[in-house]
Structure formats: structure tokens, C-alpha cells
Length: 279
Image (cartoon, rainbow, N blue to C red; front, side, top):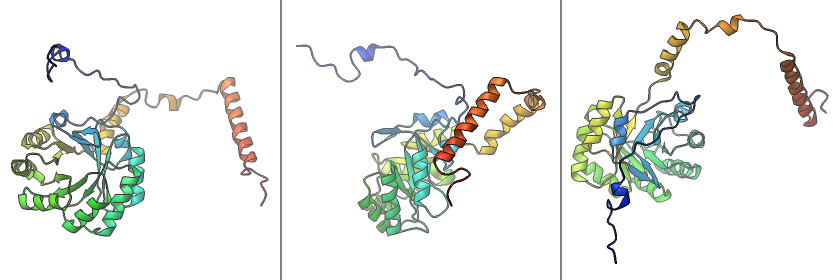
């Protein structure tokens, strides 16, 4: 009997490494690409989905047009169920939903977390001021990861959060984030760590090197995204050429518009929404 191949042996091990093919559409080729350094992280597998790069936004347009593995949907207002539901519904990637912990706490956080899970969130996020009692309350009512933000690498605070039910710690210590991540990684080698990485590749690389399993990346603003596009439009001779031309519609186009208007009118009348409907 031949010995069973071990991982890393056999046909797959001898196959030459291949680059992953990348397919893009013509219209959707313009999107937000997060720094490639984030993909060097080990990742966190959340409900079966590997997560390395996390986009920090509640902008649905960016969520639908970026290459992130997940969304970090935390915003500086009291969490609202309708916002969580819309973000989860609009997103094609896992959403980690903020459920309070600062101004909002206690049982309200637990209710918001339960609603977020029911809407399809892959995880719920509690802010740094959340009490340990709130963390425990939330962890008892949801079956998705509970992510708790910490603002430094204090191992005792981390221990309290873990014992209260935190599944993941989100390290948000500003410029000190890499050092805080390294401190927590030394104390807790197996603990899942999410961390803010900032905008630049160098900052994200430092955070990953310190031991973060996944990195939160800040996307460009709408102004930054629009600026080069508008510069290109302003410099294009043909930008307003179609607006200056006044060409009559073809007979086929006129017929199509007439038929479409008739369909809309007939549909409105049939549903009782058109003129002459009963009062």
C-alpha cells in the first residue's frame, strides 16, 4: 500500500505556481482598490468567509464598487436598525455592523445586535467605552462574532473583554496601532485581531507585520475619486459635443417612445392610478 500523501506533497505540490486570473467588466472596471498590502495578512475566517481587507465605510456606492473582503459599518451616530438592514441588503460582501457601546449601551445594544444578525450581518461591533456587562449581554444573544474595539495594547483590558464574550478585538490606537497590536499578539498568540491600517500601504504593512489578522482600510473620499474624472472631462474636447448637437429623432425612436408612453398610460389606467379614477 502506498503511503498517503501529506499536505504539501503530491500533484498539487509539484504544480507550478499560477497567478489568479482577474476578470473585470467594461463599465465596472473603475472601482476602489484597497492597498494590496492588506492581503498579506493571515486573515480571519468569519462564518466560512476569509477576511483580510476590510473597508471602513457606510457609503453604499463604495461598498458596491470595491475589492474589500468585508465592510466595517461603524458610524458616529446612535445605531439604527434601518441603517444596518440597508447596508447588509445592499452589500455583496460580509458586513460587520456597529451596534453602539458609547452613548448607546446595555440592553439596547443587545437588541440592535440581535436585529443586525437577523438582517444578515456577519458580526457586530461594540465601541471602546462599552462596559463588560454590555459585551457579555450582546455575546449571549447573538451567534455571530462580537468584535470589541480597544484603544491600546493593555493586556488586562483585553483579558476582560475576552472573558466577557468578545470573539475579536479591533485595535484602534491611531499611530500607536502597530505597537498595540504587537503587544496584544505577544500576550495572546491565537486571539483574532482586527486593526485599523489607515490609507497608505506602508501603514497597513506595519500593522500586518505587527500581527493583525485583518486590516481596516479607509477608502478615498468621493471628492478624491471624482477629482481626476472631472479633470479628464474638463480637458476633453468632446465632453459637450453631444449637448451642442440638436439632431431630430429617427422615426423608429419616435415610435418606440410613443409605444412606451402608451404602455405606461394603459398600465396606470388598469391599476386605477390614471385620470378618471374613482374618487
